[in-house]
Length: 219
Ligand code: DX5
Ligand code: ZN
Image (cartoon, rainbow, N blue to C red; front, side):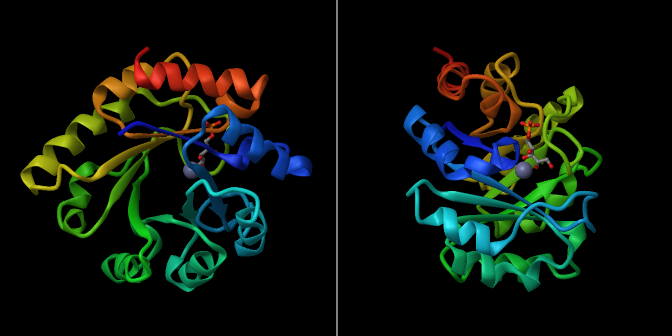
């Protein structure tokens, strides 16, 4: 499965609805929502009310990437606002397993996020319970950063762990600095969901989506 997930962090917020429609019409598969609290990461974005309002304009799945401390406090609000996937950083909570349970009990897909310095082996236990893993290929907090090449190695390590745990159904998502030059390589490594902010919203949105999808699908 190969899916393109534009991150609206790089969109023009004064015409957010219009830009979401534009990526949808161009062929985007998922809308990636970067939720930042100014504590887990040094930046603040938006919360459930914004999600609720954009929920009305598209049927595309919403993928909430929570870069917030104590994600358990806000999961119900994001689910009520209409998200379909929620990922969180394990070091942002004391009880990661409980957070996964909270997410999944509402029929929402649960994912955990690896920062560039977080080893794949930290997933050894939680891997039995999750639906996807988000590999950060930049340090979380800002759009438009440069891809950190070493993080791609984690895709290979994660695939080995998935096999060992008998969980080859888990989806692999990559986030940060994904562009037309590296998307094909990442796809060949086995990435399933490609988050792209600047590479989608800077320049011609339609052309960007078409080109990224072409690279992602290797055609
Ligand atoms: C960074 C976010 C990313 C980011 C992607 O903290 O999680 O989703 O917005 O943006 P680009 O593709 O521009 O690196
Ligand atoms: Zn993200």
